[in-house]
Length: 424
Ligand SMILES: [Zn+2]
Image (cartoon, rainbow, N blue to C red; front, side, top):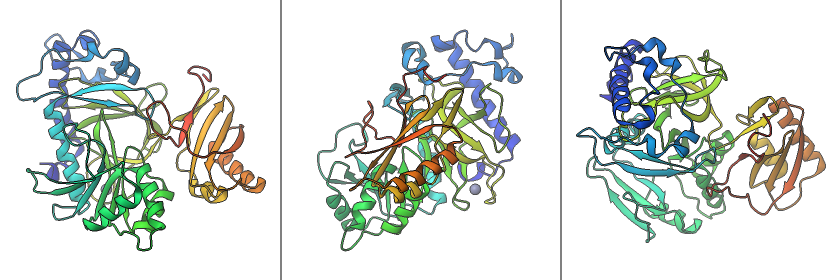
């Protein structure tokens, strides 16, 4: 169905979404304590949904998921929705949550990953490797490498232990004749640098970066190191594969509208016009275990117009703030996205950089490098960041041995270290 539905006209897609939203709203109101009164405004007395009042439904936040977890669980899972699984995530906002997913929602989402790979020409005949710490089912990986065959698709995937030394990982990629590597973007970056130091660098056709966006500098690095095309799915624990990079117009992302209903909203919760940046709000259509209705993903996106590839799926021209935190200056927020990170890394001769807001009007650039950067180099970076952020702030530079990790164990490129509420 998905190969056909991607060309549906918008009215047909909306009708599909409303059919599933109708069932989801009825299920949530009847079986989830959190939603018992919360959805009242869209229910007519005869049980029909008043779609014109959809925008009156309150926005669900990550803090709600953290604080209201018991009340958000469904007391009844309809037959055929499968066993409920549990996922934990620290997410880009650093607010750790636990989320319940029905077996059915998980199985449906898998089909969208197949479509993404299929559209990019990564079929069952392509040798794929994934770096993993845990195997499907949750068992910790205790060996270096396992060959896994998917009974459904017949596709073979090599699971390679993420905790191995880079050199061992690269040797396994070479031995298995892998063409497509799937891993967290930051991890691929580290491996790509190690690959460049190899006498015979490993060649790959694709790298798929999970967990955060792929910067232009990373794209160039993956091309230079592996000869690989970098592909970026836009996914999260709560939304699964929300959007994916177009196979023809690579700067565009297509939203998986058959999987979720989306909105792009401004500060006052009004819909953004195409071209404007707003918060990405989702309502996944299929998760009966813990329905999310108007959930704020914490990501900032820019709606695009139609795509030259002919797909009818809505376009995101930009996804900002993925994994990266947002700077909170007095009275305004700024995402440090689409900036010259390559310029910065080159100027500072840095292996890695982190941009931390340490004061209401101050940013610290932490960089990993062999030597201190010159005053002139720092000044060039400072000017560039001021141009991008368009805020009058002080910018300091600190050379560090490694980028610090947050409470969730992630190294984040952009962090805001102000106490909550200080900058508002
Ligand atoms: Zn497209």
